[in-house]
Length: 117
Image (cartoon, rainbow, N blue to C red; front, side, top):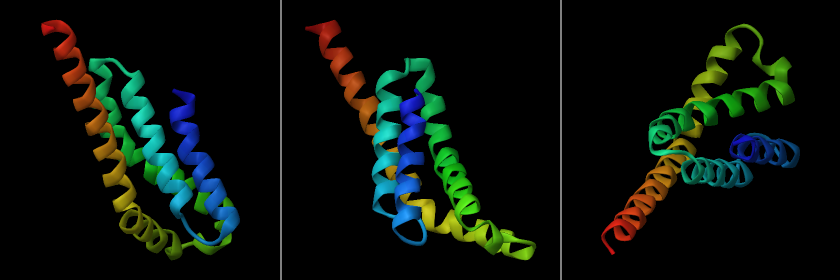
């Protein structure tokens, strides 16, 4: 599971080093990490993967931005930056949740075929 969290963090690091803000590496890391978490978790854990992935995306973004540009987020700028992160991260959050849902559906179909076939 550490890899599932590490992939988005690695993507965020790559994006911060290559330019301002989160980009493609972060998106790919978040999607792969969430898909991996859904593939490795139990049925009881699926809810946690679906619910936690948007929070993980936002948390990794906040951490990366604050580490890379901490001076830019002092005082009122932190609230503005936080709102910006939510808006800019929404497509990444949606892609991560959609990936987890797809992995879960594939696992359910595969398990059903195995049980009935």
